[in-house]
Structures are given as C-alpha cells and as structure tokens.
Amino acid sequence: MMRKKQKEVRDPEQIEKILRRARVGRLATNGADGYPYITPVNFVYFRGKIYFHCAPAGEKLDNIERDGRVCFAIDLPLAYLDTAYEPTASACAVTQLYQSVLIRGRAEQVDGLEEKAAVLNALMASHEGVADYADIAPDTPALALCTVVAIDIESLTAKAGLAQGKGAAEVEKIRRYLLARGLPGDLEAAALLG
Amino acid sequence: MMRKKQKEVRDPEQIEKILRRARVGRLATNGADGYPYITPVNFVYFRGKIYFHCAPAGEKLDNIERDGRVCFAIDLPLAYLDTAYEPTASACAVTQLYQSVLIRGRAEQVDGLEEKAAVLNALMASHEGVADYADIAPDTPALALCTVVAIDIESLTAKAGLAQGKGAAEVEKIRRYLLARGLPGDLEAAALLG
Image (cartoon, rainbow over all chains, first blue to last red; front, side, top):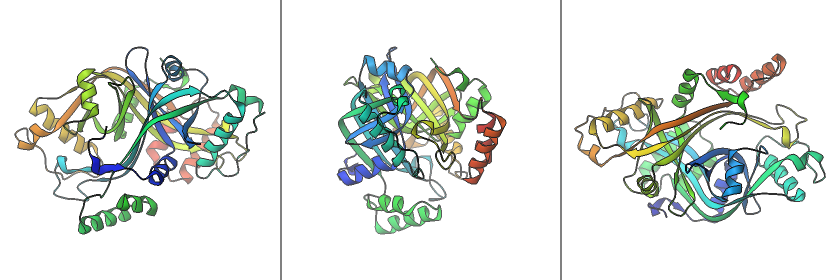
C-alpha cells in the first residue's frame, strides 16, 4: 500500500531500469526469534525473478527454509538536497532524492545446475566492468557447492522521490545542483523525468 | 549469530565509526501480512540509539505500533573486486569488500519535544556539507507534527569483509586497486586495518 501516489512509478520499463541499475539489494527474512532479519545481497534481476548467490549455510538460509516469505528492497539514493541546495533550509526541509523498489515474494534455493549456471553468469554480466570473466558451465564441479536463491515476485511497488510536481524553475535548479556534483547523466535524466 | 568469526568487528570505536559514516540504513519491521517490510531511512546514531525522522503515517509506523521488534542494517560497500582486479577470476571468485552493522532492537515513537529537537539537530549535523542550517528549538511549532522514531538497541554485531587473513602481497594489491579507483583514504585505511 503506497501512501504518496504521486511518487509511484508504474512504467514497467522504468521499474526494470531501476532493478538493473542496482547491484546491491536488501533481503529481509522472518527470524526464528520473531525479529525480522536483514542481509545485503549482490543480486540480479533475471527471467522475471530476483536471484542471489550466498554462503551455503547461515541464518538467512535457515530463515528461508523455515519461512519463505521475504521482502526485498532496492534503493538508489540519487542526491541529498541539503543547505548547499537551499541555504535557508531547516532540518524539516532537507530532502533525499531517490528511486526505490519494494518486493514481497517467496524465496527458495535453486537446485537445477542449468539454472544455477545461468544465474551466476547473469550476475557477472550485470556487474559493470566485468566483461571477460570465465563463463560457468552447468557441469562445473564447484557449481553443486554454490548456493543460489530465487525470489518469486508476488508483489512489486516502485517509487521515485524526485522532481515530480515541481515547477520548471525548481527542476532547473535541481538539474544544476546534480550536474555540479558530477551525477551521471542518465540518473539525472531519470530524476527529472521520473 | 555470526558464522564467519574472522570477519567480526569487536572494537567499539570501529563500530561507532561505521555507524557515524553511514547516512542511510535499512529498517525491517514485521508486517501485518506475515512478510517482513523494509524501509530505507536517513538516520543518526545518537546517545546510544538509532534515530530517524519519517512521515507521520504509513506502513512502517503501523508495524512498529503493532510490534516494536525491528532489525536495522547498515552496509557500506567499499569496492567490488572483479576481473579488473583479478583477470582470471570466475564468477565464484568475485568479492565485495564491505563493512556492516546489524542491530536488533525495539522501535517506538519519540514524544518529548526536547528529545525530538535534539535528534533533528543531530541528524542535520551528522550529514556532511550541512553546516549552517537553522537550529530547531524545542518550542518550534512544526516539531509537534514531526515524527521521530528511536530504536533501543538490544543486540549489535558488526562485520568487515575486507583484507583480513590475506598476505602482504595481496593486501598491497588491494590497496593499489582501491587507490586507482579514487577511494577515500580513510575507507582504504579501514579496509586494510579492519
């Protein structure tokens, strides 16, 4: 349920762009002690699911085996509009520009070697600067020892706390502020079009 | 419970440094639907607690009112050692260098105006580049409308997936890799001493 409808992102292409731009997401599982449990994971959005690779034992896997219900969150902080942006701002006026995706789903370990190899190769390919790695074949012996988890997406919402609803002068001011901080052009474009 | 003891950070000063360096943390609450629920928040570590400021209504606050048990996670990704670091690396050998803190605690809204004002001022002061903001006084009318949440820390563990246990030649290689990517000196020092 989203409170601020103005910030909702509905365009599937834009949502996919956020999913592909993020390298780290946070996974929350239900802990045995009644507390939720958060783990940051390097992930890839692949074939409509969230996949990550992790150690073969640990609290996160124990939690998933006991209760597959998870939350997976991606947030891309874009810029912090502080007093350098608005010198007269008080603490209440400071704003974080961001894009985020929130997923509820079911997590489970992937057993198939074909799927595991495809996921690991997709993970590598999704990470910038990693181009000439050695491809993993489904019959690689180490693959059986690798743990790969898939999150089957049950619901997804995306938000952008950006320049929506602001006037042209304000948008131009934000654009100059971002450019002065060397923020990437595509992020800037996403911010202003978001 | 931490599986990899080698990665544990026990020095309170180093833990506090991680808490003070991070600007964004992720809060997980227990959702009414049985799924955990993650929200990124701008926070401050102040007087031994985690504090954040949020909208006066929403799923996160509803969850906290129903069940105060939360998880709060901070992770500082430092660098990704990919094939630019190790050209022959396969997908299994790629490593993320990071520092992280995981907290379990009880969250509740702060009602006192003195505490709220102190927290908001600490939030502003903790954010780099925000020096000359207007201080908020406890009698500021808007303060009553501001929502501030405190997390009482029940347990805390910190980890550093850095250069521990590596030989001098490998540490020197990581140092050069970080420097070539313009990573800040203090982060680099933390990485190599961590």
